[in-house]
Length: 206
Image 1 (cartoon, rainbow, N blue to C red):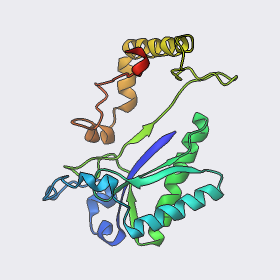
Image 2: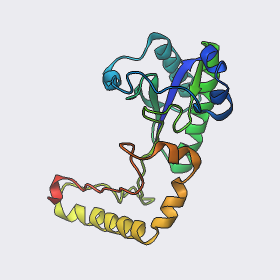
Image 3: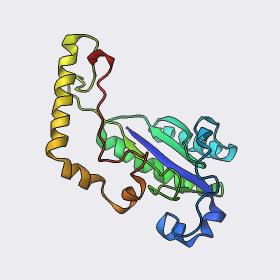
Image 4: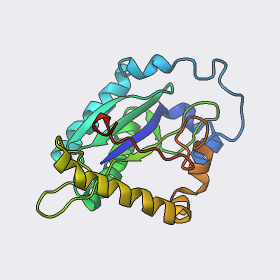
């Protein structure tokens, strides 16, 4: 399942910025005066107009057969997130693209504009498209479910070992998959650089 982050800004202000219109990110201008001091924004309720947009989109997506798991603020000011309920990988990718199209269309009706670029603004967090995934069998066996007994954990341990070995053997391929202009602007500092991969198997393995 995807976790799609985005910024929502007034459409009239968006149209005054040729860099945003043409590139999806700012190329000139000053850094925010307060930088990103308002990180508690994550726990605040979304602004009224944005909440109206997100609830409208959630209803439309449900009518299209795509239930949304959550919608809330993100860390940066004017940044938000919505996530379709996880499903088969190919369906999940289609659902997220459909969601992005619906969100953009509905935002324009409210005089808003959505920015999906990985790093629309310098000096504050960028947008992630987090992909939560697992591998299973056609009989319902989940390879990445830790289990509650030592016996049940054997499959999980094996799957984690295979994943770690694959990442080590094909790290150049992993880097190629995420290396493009947008992501390289976003990644780094505290925004999950691909050079750092951590695996936490849970307290049952400590």
